[in-house]
Image (cartoon, rainbow, N blue to C red; front, side, top):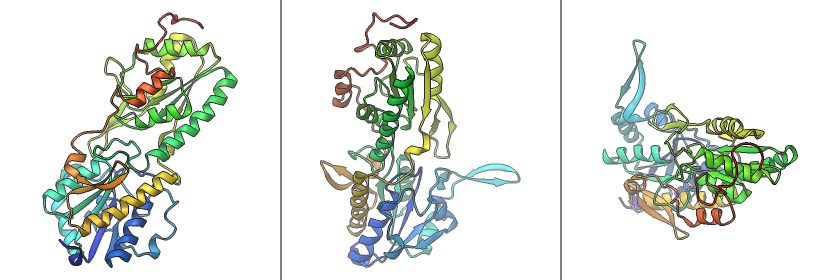
Length: 375
């Protein structure tokens, strides 16, 4: 489809909220209106808006002032999958494929394209809709930075900045009280937030899903650090032990495990094994909120503009992405084929080890430290 044939497009934000969503919406709308003369409508609450016909027009004046604003003006949800829509029939929860309804609703609004701003789950849904004939362009969004085929996703560095600020504060209170401070951060099965926040904040221990931890090595690391009076550890919510143990609480509507609580589990275990005074902080949704940092504002703006250009070029089934500092497009199919995890031998991990940070595995941990009492 040539750009001259496009008259009207839709946009939605799906999955968890993320700093920079509004910046993408703003850029997409401004580029669509000023560069191409298109109309834009915004579906509210993700794919639910597409199913229930909840939408509103978006003009240049509607997106004014959005650049520094957190959240998403369109609303979002991670509980609606058109292919597995949950409804109640005679008091029973029933799962139904409502994808055809979503496609019919799209066409009823005379739309020529749909821009889906989302993470792995939302983009998988977008890909399925594309396979059924919907002209879709994706924009990668997640604070977890775990989408493949793009060097970084917007929202990630704002989340890292939030975690880094928390680590800085935990350093001062931990030092004052001679305690071990544990910070649990988000990331699901990827440890990007924990790794980069831990490096930026100068923690003593970083636990990530990609490098299984041994609780004895964790305790040895913290006991070795305690000779300096205190210790700080950052733990990814999806961190797993060498025995494969994680802490989850069921799954969401998109089929992803709900993580959370590993910090408290580790804190109790460390205190019991070592006798150290341990305190745990869980950042939770603080990492999703607030104004995006400068990097995320710029990246989100570039992504929004490129999404409009992708529609104009007819690159449906593609997702905008960052490669070698340039924004281009890749197929959504490639982007969601696998989760982008941290290679255990990556330069970032090696740098952390070089400066004495432990990952709770045997590498670089003083084996002479006893597990009972202070060293």
